[in-house]
Length: 136
Image (cartoon, rainbow, N blue to C red):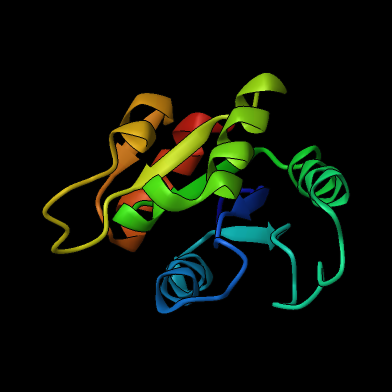
């Protein structure tokens, strides 16, 4: 069996764990010969009571150590300043961004297309292959 690299990943989830987020983590967890550590915030209410500056610093702390930022696209991205913040910060610190087109999605937000280093289909093999290409 080849050496398994443990990928450090941040999956954007717009402050709440949706079915999209949970499915993306399931794709990664079930992938063959793939190990990863999730740097996304572990709890829905972890940032309650923080102001914008504090939230920004927390997002930076989560993104700084990762090797790749994953954005599961959906039109909600157009309405989330925090997802935009995550993508902007990832670019600022040189982290590759992987955009995932959700299955059956008719429109992908242009901001994700423009910002992502790579866009892939909504399936485990596409996601894992792209992570391996983006992370040296």
